[in-house]
Length: 311
Image (tube, rainbow, N blue to C red; front, side, top):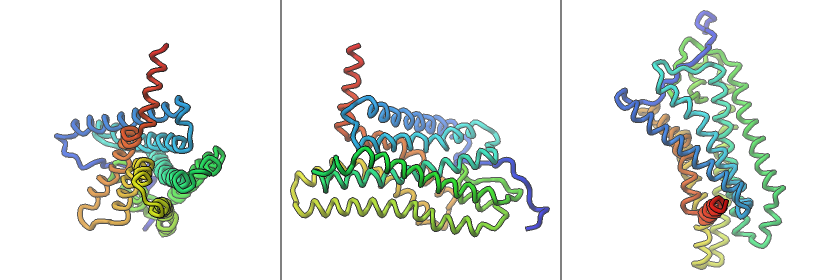
């Protein structure tokens, strides 16, 4: 690529979602309602866990961190999407695009690692109930969360720094509703082999390794229950792990469908819709999955309201 065909890109054009103009206002209201539901639902879970001492356990410590991650993950893309839906020209600055990509990778990875920590917590609770409090000590729980933050920070920073070394051509149109890494690499004029290699190796590990660890944890749990088969044991597995399995299926199912099972037709539309699933729908559904089927959360909500009514 000659130097004349290169330019300093100061902003990108986000094409957004493939929505007909007549339905723009309807979808704006729908996405606004979904985002507000995500924010409110996850904040309620965080506040309940902070206020109710009955929920000061490893399971709910990880859940509060997951809710914080969901809240931030959705907030990385949704406010900008809603803002651009009201604009004639949906632009984002170069710095803003890099920042959005960094935090998107960070909170997406953080959710993945937190789901692993929660799976390990359920594995210890069911397979080693007598040693649960000693194994899942506060020090271990905090250590797992800190490790998740360190790993996700390193991964997101690596991709961001590698992206800053690239030059971009005159084409600044991103066929997405946020600054997706793969979309940005397609716009680059520079050699992207190093970027693609890092995406393939490190990115694959960040998605595949956590998924395999979760599968391994649940395989161990099922194996432990089958050794002493009983209706009570099976019910215990479903009651303690059902919510977590639902979230894992939603989150990893859409990511695997998007990145590991690419389609040959309408790939842009499919990518956008699938991205909406794990960036918007999953963070919105998580509070419902963990609260509607969880007696501890319902009990905590009642106790908080009873305390308020006494004052």
